Length: 108
Length: 123
Image 1 (cartoon, rainbow over the protein chains, first blue to last red):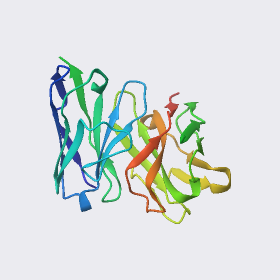
Image 2 (spheres, each protein chain N blue to C red):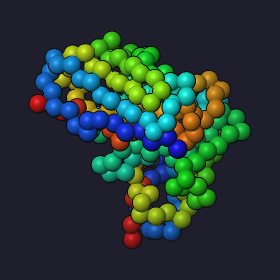
Image 3 (cartoon, chains in turn cyan, yellow):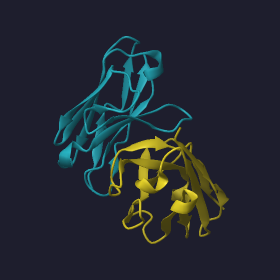
């Protein structure tokens, strides 16, 4: 199965700053079938990005995804207070689908 | 509005069984694959099982293969997970999640999630 490694484990930033989250795959992700999710405490995950770079319905344009092959990035251009959360990447190009271990974006 | 409501969780002894249910509404249930994803306390997400729109394709994580069985009833807009031979390491919040692709196979991004049902395996 494809192992996804997210870095850093924790990102400490202030509102208004730019956040860059990394997701690296142990082998190439087929057809850029890579998604990103946001999870806040006590809530279910929410789909942010699919197909590596397409925003899901209702997701603000400060969230963007990029990458291909084994290296993917989620960028939040200007952090809003509601963006502090845990972010997971997921690959669904190979079975079984797998998730990264998560990156926590916390308020500095 | 898409809604996924899980039920059936609880405290169960090791080796016993439990059946989870997920009631779906707000979309054409029999057009989409469905999945169970779990999250152990304080941990990350782990895909457990998925089933295609017509039950023709089913998959399981190695950690549950042979012990868990996924099924669906399209007439009732419901998804199920029969969990047998439960272990302490199965303790988690179990989410029901909708596949984003119409009549796709059981591997896609998950565009809607329920709030989860907690399963605790302990003596």
